Length: 222
Image 1: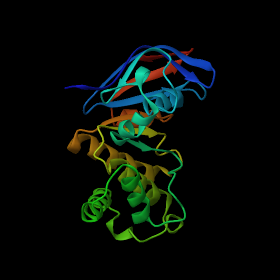
Image 2: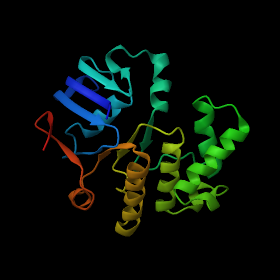
Image 3: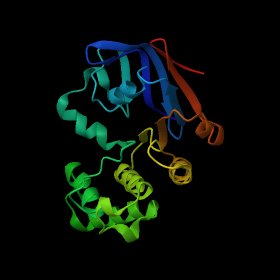
Image 4: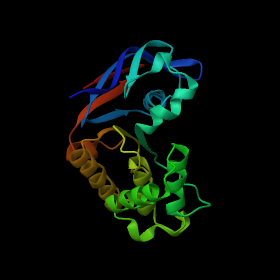
């Protein structure tokens, strides 16, 4: 199994400050990895470094074959095409339909063939059980439905890794479990690695994976 994320002795920054010193982390194809820790200990900064929102200035980091230390600005879209990102607050475009949200992502990641785009949008929506809601606006959907659309958006480009930042944080427990089951299905059936930030230890008990903890300016596997 190849590594899709590797950090070696990497210092993770937030703004001007280092929030995690000397991160060592390997994530392989098909892995389920959790990052846990108190608020403000650098969990989201690690995610931002993985998706090249935060620069890597010390140590080494590689994501889906891209060297983060040498990454040029023009290469960032190509890196992000290999990743799917799911946020706690969904981050859908509220002024357009579900279908148009997904269409926007495909256009912005270089798709041109209209027939292929329509086919891929339908496949992604079917994978998350939202194919009948393609023409709805986000405000017409429940929180759980919006998160399902966000997951459809994340899998459009068949990513090697899904990055999920507290994906169930704004959902009730029953809806949250449906979202987690969906993510685990993608992990198992498609072999997509998942790196998930969570505060909820019961998730880890129910869906065991590798666990890294941010604490005292470090992040170590526990």
